[in-house]
Amino acid sequence: MAVKIVRQPKKIALIGAPSSAAAFSAGSEKAPAALRAAGLAEKLQGIGYELVDYGDCAPRLFADDEEHRRARNLPEIVAGLNDLKTRAELAVKSGALVLVLGGDCAQVIGLLTGVRRYYKHVNLLWFDRDADLNTPASTPSGRIDGMVVAHIIGRGAPELVRFWSEAPLVREPDVTLYGIERLDPPEQEFLSKSPMRHIDAADIQAKGVHKAAHDALAQVHADARDFVLHLDTDVIAQEEFPAVNVPGSGGLDFEAVRASLVEFAKHKNLLGLDVAQYNPEKDPDGSGAKKLIHVLVEALSARFESLNAPAAEAAADPAELPPSETTA
View 1 (spheres, rainbow, N blue to C red):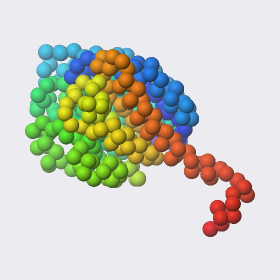
View 2 (cartoon, one colour; view 1 turned 30 degrees about the vertical axis):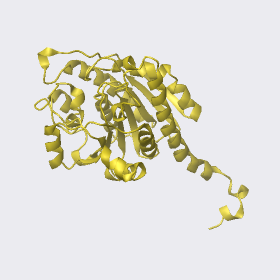
View 3 (cartoon, rainbow, N blue to C red; view 1 turned 45 degrees about the vertical axis):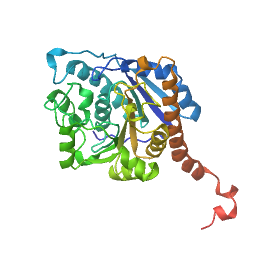
View 4 (cartoon, one colour; view 1 turned 120 degrees about the vertical axis):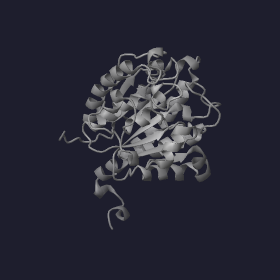
């Protein structure tokens, strides 16, 4: 659609996508409400953002769905994505950075579809411990959360592959996986032959976060292409953040996640961010919500300062600046 979108660097569009239909357990559908209750919106406004809240989609709930063991809960997942897509389209059109408080990882498909309504090409930076490259033919669980990237690149259940009319939603060379360390054998085999890029958790630790994050931005061609960022909170080490659906040993420490998010969020070509897999049922004292909000607010604060400082400087009256700042 030929619509000129004017970016609004001081504006955030907030959407809740309370779903656990694609997940490995119940609880993540409560994440948007928990993060709202912990004060996320108020903290973003405190930075200086104008926040427009598009509300929460209808909840979509976890179920075993033993009748469809290879692709569980597809009707519920698709219904949730249709709801999110409508809100995401409006949010993207507004020029704001779109922030989706998700439950399960599949919700990023709704965000990407909303973006593709107005942007012909979009890249994806997948910040997750898992590659999510299984398909209904290779899945060990039947849970769509383990197959999201596969469906985004056009492999898997037709209901999701064709959710965007021009499959794939994102091309393989335009996806970078960041922080991965858990791969099933079929995923490992596929990734070894795919043009998709990846930076493993071990690579981040070896290179240092700053270098690894900038390498990831280069791989998604962030300087020339618009991109969406997906954050699965299970990329954080279990010792520091246990409130996730699929915990496990390893992962990145909070500082590595924070520093990476700061670098990603500062980039002017970031169109949207979704946050997935935080499970309030595993966070009875709310400490996990506070930690997650702290990381998000710090990253988005860095974005606000990075994108709005140049505008403020340009608006300053040259006559009021020292001579050294007004002459070449």
